[in-house]
Image (cartoon, rainbow, N blue to C red; front, side, top):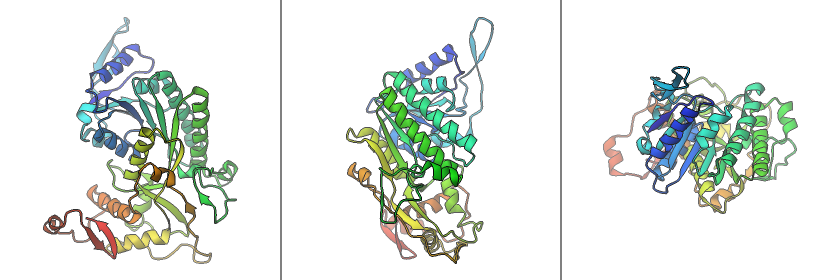
Length: 393
């Protein structure tokens, strides 16, 4: 694996970046792709899948570490490498199969256009997954929009990128107070920006305007853009830290949530989200937006599944809103991704794998008894019953 930490506007460092790409053995399909925000939850699984499929991956991270940083050595503009410690946030990427041969970590900030251009240089595809996750409007909106415009422009300037895949969100789709209960949510739906601002939901506002900016920039620059709109993403973690969507599940297990909300949420497995990104990149027929969702559940359904699978944890049993009628799940269509051959894991399986991953990563104590290894070996890959729910062992 090559790690490149380049200094902005530095020709020598940029040359080093290009040389690093050229020195990488080509993947089985000979294609190089860029993944922004490579150490993130979705992006990590995407990098893993791309490496498994034979791609060479240039992943942007804030601090790639290693020892290929450069500093000015003298007035003649020569550059001397100095040692920089590895960032533990990238350890899971470096441990992936194929990383040593075909993963290049590049230092790049979303608001540094030159760094984005260097990361995209020589790539046939770009997966723009990096985005702020916050409800602070100053930290969410401008970085999301400007960063997206920079990525589209860098792809257009590269001369090699044939398609950009943009990771949007269900937040750009469903925030519409005027949508009727019988309306099927699909790729034609857009969130109401005024409603997002009125409710101060800056995350959904930021994702919606960032996606609109992506479409506008792609049309203006002549870039082939496809979009994936994931719902709340669950499933096993590759990274060591707990991200926002997994914290949503963890709070129901560690005792921090005593009640559950009277609310509905759509869920999808992170491995299916990664597969969706690859599918829309590789399929010539893919175009436009792609709603990535497996099922819509009320919070009560979620906690009941968790309680059945893991009865040893203090899963809440009471709703925080006992006065109003129970919120009803909305209808949605994921047909566009199914037409591309994507098969979604059931949410119960995803929740099971989420909890097992939290245990393995040390974020959740193991309170119940483990299935004996001998028993697992006798029925490899078989479905077992956990609290009446079929789970792949």
